[in-house]
Image (cartoon, helix red, strand yellow):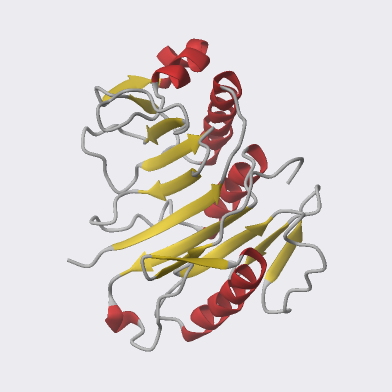
Length: 259
């Protein structure tokens, strides 16, 4: 079975967000998502360690307590004080127990001393992609909300698939097939991107770069060429680190100030 997914990801290290602030930002993110698509409704939040889905309407009045309850734990399920807090929300027009191609999934790990992360995905990689939801317009809006709301030093929206027939000459890189990229003000200083990329300056001095104003297509040679231009900028500005032989983005602290 061919596996493919369109995702948004951002990472940072060592933030100092308190549970009430994490809860406030998570709730604000979901509320800003809701007008974008019917799929971003009926939010269910995963409550650990029982892995029980809880409606957002039930959680919203007690978000800080909910965040506290979802602290990252050790292997023996004891709270890990340096591991931060783990939040997962799933939205869809029609809720399904196992999820479907029109579901949206948002995961946030915050207040960890070593790895904080945002991950946004539509559907599941083992299901047919729903291109009524996977559009440039929607991903661009979601990307902006996430980069603005959370202290991301950088972020990337990308496509990942295992269909080599789509473009047998394309090789996977650190950021897979990047579609959108964000660089914080500190990482965007002096940046003059090539004219092939769409460049939007943010109010705080950061930048959002788009490879194409369409759904990125691995089989389109012009798309992959532009994606390579975008990735070259991301690698130059973010850097890469080596871990078990795999190239990964270098670590950066949480952004301070507006995006």
